[in-house]
Image 1: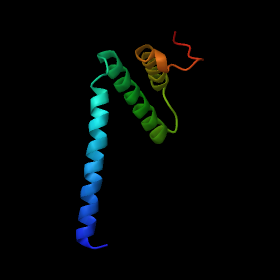
Image 2: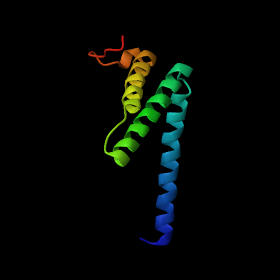
Image 3: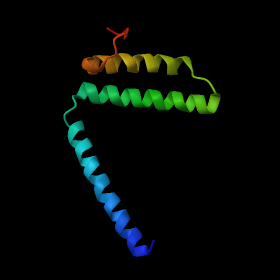
Length: 89
């Protein structure tokens, strides 16, 4: 592949990615503050637990509590997506 072809392909991928990201950004703008906060909390809980697993090969009680809290916050923020055996409600 020539450098010109590679540059053209990279530009095409960039435009496609920007188009996909615009759709995601528009959809995210419709989230409520509760939904945004629940997603951010869940993301942090997952990231922290993942770090604990990688570094300590275990999770802490704080990680476990945060995962449970994240599950309940997500269930409350997105009741239509909550799985049937959810214990949060």
